View 1 (cartoon, helix red, strand yellow):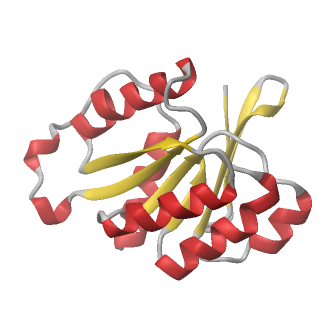
View 2 (cartoon, one colour; view 1 turned 135 degrees about the vertical axis):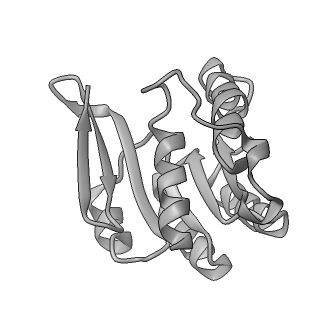
View 3 (tube, helix red, strand yellow; view 1 turned 90 degrees about the horizontal axis):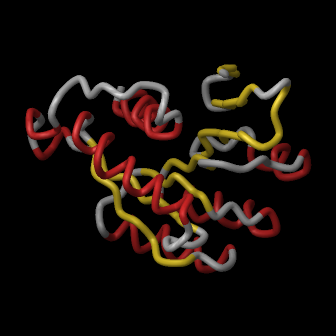
Length: 168
């Protein structure tokens, strides 16, 4: 059940922007009901990452039982692995990654497996080779790929549950 709640929270955070209303205030939840998610950022000073950070802090944290830990600048797979370990030490249960280095993705997923943390790519595609290597890993939750889309539709792969959602 905890995995399902965390998965749904990850999805809500990843699919942000679909709704502007906030259903409940985070202070309505007890401390043990709040989930912590690390957010790996390729450059926290970029306009895109500032927008996601603001959205996660101003809307998701306000309406869902979740808090976020944001990385500094992630420059390669090793720095993403280091952030994953640091986030785990600070109570994170999962990672939303906007870094997603294809060359080291398998190592990143292995780090999440070792740390028992869920991992979702926030905005990136996964090569066929990497997907075949990680698709059955229970700690890999999938990806949101806005750039590689069909007729301007985003594709969400939630491989853990075998779902593919399409939205426009």
